[in-house]
Length: 479
Image (cartoon, rainbow, N blue to C red; front, side, top):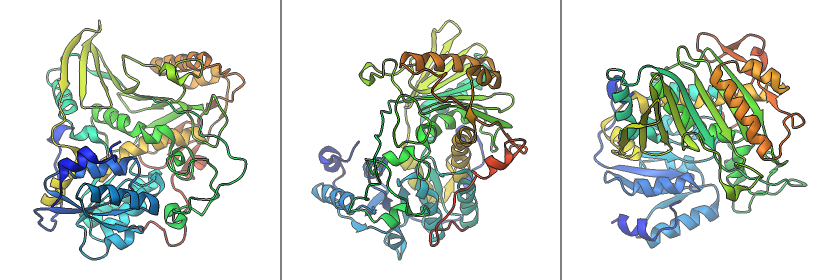
């Protein structure tokens, strides 16, 4: 029998409100869900801990293509009295009836491949953010849920937190501080250099590199640290805009009414500043998403407050370094990456506080698997759109070119966006970065076709080419 309390104590693994009709399709009735966790580093370790807290879940299998990580995790579980079966290839885990459902915490480039393969094999899925590596994959994921009828829950935890749900209910009951004008998200998260290798490294001997690469070609390993630092390289990750950003972009989208389509246009600017390394994604970035009538503004900063001194901390806005500032006519809703937020008036005085998490995001997933019914705000379509907002910003940035600041200000004409550009210039200067000589990129303006998932206009050809990656034989995504 599982000793949940002992595992939590001994293991070093830790590291629109419901007004919409539920996504519902008949599922096999269950009283207990046998779960397999795929991907055990980082968030995967958190998956294990959270699942062991859910009474209706039983952890029966773990999977990782790094045998060292797999063996280490198994040993820690066994020490805590939790016995599991191990796999290096997730497809073998899906065979037979060992598991009823799986959670996925692998690198971004394999999220959709594994998730779609899993639901096609009849297994409901919980998939980490971003649910996709690109916009096309996210659409395929949403299509797979509709086609198979299986539960697919995204990893945006705010959707299962009572604090944010209560805050939006209050703000939309009688307009206590007026209408929403701007939804702002920020990710000011310390990201030092990942280093620069002189020549390709070999994957760790414990890693099945074919399985790890999945849909991507077997590319040379151009980074010192094999695990995690893939986040900052184009083939595998999506930078911090696509790593942390989807959480806060999801809150922004929730605040503006949960549109199920993309904005009319998107524009990004920024660059990778402060060091030269093997990372490719921007570490300093502004994204403006032209929803009507309420736009979204998002900022990424990976450099510290000043002097490239990470011990000195990060910049903050309204007390937040990772969170949301939602600006209304008569005040703001402010909250971080947690189950707490508060409303202030125009003078900054706190009017109302909201706290409480309610059932965990994993609890809501397990209950959805048992009932076969899921609220749309936690389903694949919602996760896809929020992830796609990050992908939009990255596509814009990737197809852009170096431009002087006056051109960037010309593009970011919205007052809040223009002010963000000014602050970003000051932030870079405080770290000794001369934006006039450092290659500041102004992204291409992306214009969607009625909020759809293709582009028109001058940037269309380049932008449409980045809607989808290439897929290696044997790892194609098919729905």
